[in-house]
Image (cartoon, rainbow, N blue to C red; front, side, top):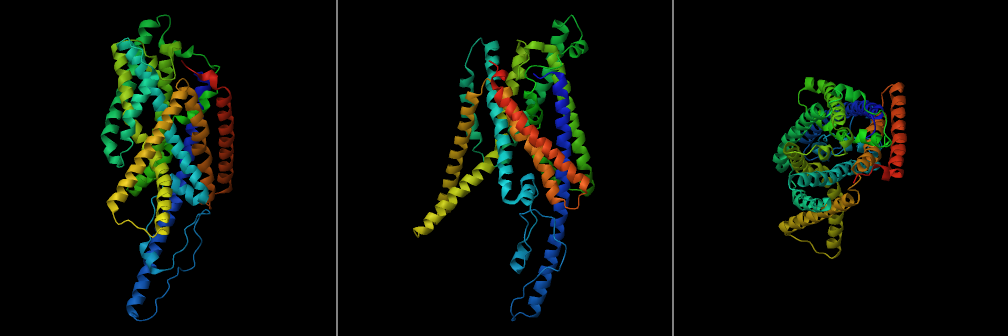
Length: 453
């Protein structure tokens, strides 16, 4: 716990920073989307001219199509080159714009750091799941059956369940799990509020709930841990802003999306603050990092703990899917290229595509298993430090993704931005870099202060 004087301002600051970076990303998207559409139109026109010339002179030498002189597009060091051959013109198609794609266009070869940073954030969320669920199930079994099963045993059981689920390669097959998890999370959140109101009414008889909220401590000894936590609450969702904008079909809806995104994000954070204040004022010193493990004993509370645990278990494979794809794509591609080179050196080439597909699937499943086991080992080591893990992930990974990279991408890609916008980008990125180092250092140095047994 941080205290309201730190937690509330930190969440508000993180929200404004998130919205600022999201706005900058959407401006990058608008510039790049317009450039792609213009380039596609010009490529189509030149290809048509080439085909007309070829039909007029079928036996003559092939002509080389060139683009008319035009202003250079706004690009970073990884700019796409103008294409000259007819085959390249015919094959051109706009790329799907995403956070990593915009980063590649802005930073060139250095964008791989951002891609792996996003993957690390997703893996970090999965790591918190591996700590959260065993804590919940431990409390549930103790209350319901009087059994004290170690959290490590629950962690091993969870891994045995999650590993086969992460072998799924088609994300659409995870849809039923996601729908069920959403229903259970809504049930859990609503039930936590109901239990909090009920507990406050029956046990805190000396003061009303508003009075209890006003009497909460302003600052706690471990307040610095919440700085990273404030950015972790977004769980890297800024990477979804551009794909969501890209998915909007109608032009008028595309124009409305940035405002809707701001309103929805602000409403969610407002609910976070309301939820946290109500539960903290009701349960007082009983509150732990995993709130569901802080609920008073009773059958209703136990159903909430089980529901939330099941929801997180079903959410895990969907949360891990993007990170798994990024990691496995790079590792498997590298292994495959080495294997292909070896085959060429020995003048051997397999014609059995089914065997090659099976080998790729086997390779992918083995690597996914190793990644899950690695996360499990880290979870065992940090099982008493959920708050610290959340804080470190938020500060070390979440802050750069939300505060540092988007403003710099905007500075590179949106070349007609006014000087005031560029100065603001530098300022925000500088604040983000300083906060990343300071918050990460504070969390690591004071690691033992945030432990919970």
